Length: 496
Image (cartoon, rainbow, N blue to C red):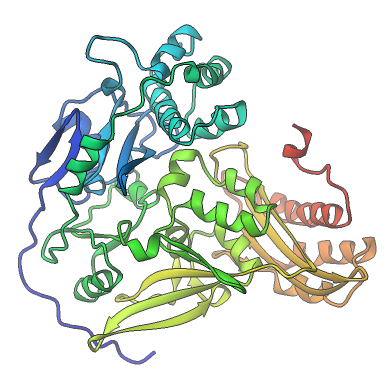
């Protein structure tokens, strides 16, 4: 690329914008909050709101879950989030509930709390506040949609919560029982009115930038290319809590309205970089239903509600789940920047995006804005697989996604994306070449298994050995062959 032409950095001191949010009926305003301070630390240490517990500090256990509400039109949209990895400033302009905020003024418990009590859903009690908050968010969503909570919905809502006393059965029972009372719906009108007065500031001299327009995002990125760009911060939060990194300035793109959309076109869908993982996978599964179960295993519900597909791609982890799937689907990314007083962009195929371990062609003033995914053709078959130690809320040891097009059982097109086997998410180019043009029979399968085991040289680590990963790749290819030839009983979800 040609040399970047951007405005010189402004040599002005950065200041901390006051953090303002709704809590317990009033707007809370706090000054001098560092941009990299977590919401959990703010709640427990600064505000002394200790109902929210610290467990893992990594977004895994759910003890720290709180619920935030965002004003969408005249209503609130509720989201259960891991406060331990969420920057405190990310809730600017939102409503906040902790486990201490749910009971009525007269002391009556919220239905989520009452159901946990009646179903004996609490044992040691440490994880209970997080479970209650996940149930509270589920309750509010169910009331808004007028739907009943079944066991599947309960398991999904609780997929980001861990109970070390193994009390899941009564907790799931509580999730299904709490809806016997619908009279605790939050009165949203006064909250929405107050939130509308807390519009995010676009002041470009603060240390936590939260633009709401695409142009403003690109302009502040050009002015502050050294700032840390975040969306859901489900990975960046780990850099704070586990890596002990400090971030002097953050650009948060999660409020950019243009990037929160999924746009459907005849030949492709365009997923904005600020679309959360749950909505992104729902859009993908509308075209390819086989991706629904894969999306549910991506992470627990709070991570899927906060994390974004664009952030997962830009982060570039070799064990990120979305990239192998998107590589198999021939996805592209749209990179945008503000240069010479105009917006410029380029479209990069995802298989040309990564240059090394957590490295990509993205340059300092660019923002990954869109993910372009071709829509399926009539003769396409697609499968996506993930192997990890836990079914829910766990990182992949190996993942493999395969797109096939067959005519009379002969492979006319094939793309394969793999994760956990190289320094970056990769395509299985040699294996694709061994399969193309061949009859999709057992002989071709065995040839493909041999090639895919030889194509990659994965590392051994705590999740899996190199030999195990190579063997799993071959077995996942076998599973794809079974499914694509009519055997529908090779997945765990098929047994339920």
